[in-house]
Length: 112
Image 1 (tube, one colour):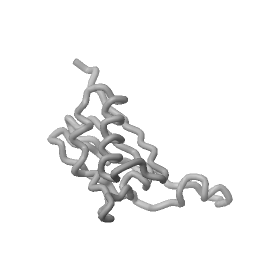
Image 2 (tube, helix red, strand yellow):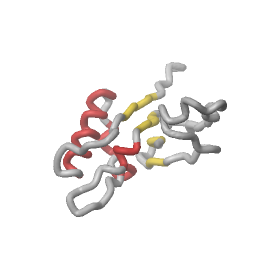
Image 3 (cartoon, helix red, strand yellow):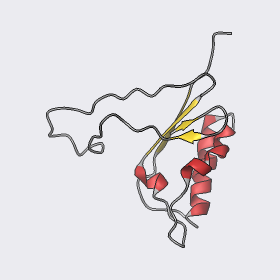
Image 4 (cartoon, helix red, strand yellow):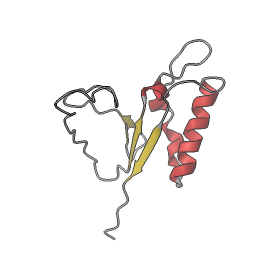
């Protein structure tokens, strides 16, 4: 998911799909690389496992992750991910059991 400068979240579609990590060990070909472009000012890429978007609230609604990216405005990346994790736990009304790993990549402009 790319978090745009204006706060919108986009989930780019890959050119091709591959098996989840660890399930394609016996295949001869690996996954194809996918380029995701950042526009000027776009600075964050959130990579996450499916458990993150599958976190359900007690009524059964999935987590609307794109609506939650405002917590990633926190300047410290560790605290931003902690805030997102806490938001997911609140959404699920408690700890959820699933693969919910997240990686936040930030691009910093050092040209100035």
